[in-house]
Length: 372
Image (cartoon, rainbow, N blue to C red; front, side, top):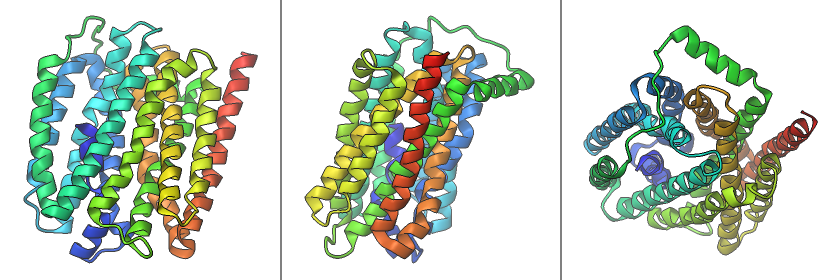
């Protein structure tokens, strides 16, 4: 539910450009603002959940998401759309800020990597579903009707969540102390085993998610001329990411986690280079490879943070996600001049430069662990 709502506007970007007479970068703010406010709200929810409980805050945030989706179906200006998407991002932060901490409370150390991998694989399915709904319903009925369908889905998912989620048994509350919260986050940022993974996660998403945004403009133009519905199908490539996330726990039981993260970065480089080809099928293959590599790295990094945090797991996981979603928000700005002046070749060049950095950081982390 969460990630369907986050990414539902991505296949609609060319449609928003045409409807509201805005630039591609401006249309991208319908996604960027959501990820930005989501990222900035994560620490708040993670910290409050340490005191107020995990399930209560997750439930309230889901209700807020539903109310925003209903309101989005009624907007008639681009400004209203952006305001509501920004507010929705705040509500969307509640579950991802808390979910991994909830699993950290309830699962053993051996089970946690597998649980996190399955959770993130479900996130990829949500991202696929939102984009398919956005593309198909947008082409068929219009962009506002997309939010009507999403609202119905949200209501259903909230009911299932309330019915099936097990109560917390391993949670113990702690009083919210702003000074202590700040010190906890500072401790996590000072921890070299966490800090470098925060940077890797942010920079990887910085590139990965924004490649898809610029790909919608590339593929909607000549020679492919894909419709909004067909662009939505492009995001089925996330299915390889679902597989990568689910496999990550198995892989890390045999290979050191930093090396798995490094391998994921290298796989994304390979996929990105393949997207340079003009054939639509090869472009799709490149994105399939990208999604597999990215989600192997992301699942492994998320599990690493939850395992290596010595205290306040929710704050540690939230700090990772802050870097992660700030990366998503800023990557479009970074790639914009590459796209404007050099087209898709420029996007690939800018992407590989950043991916080389994340690969190098993962290798450095591996040697740091060996020398510890």
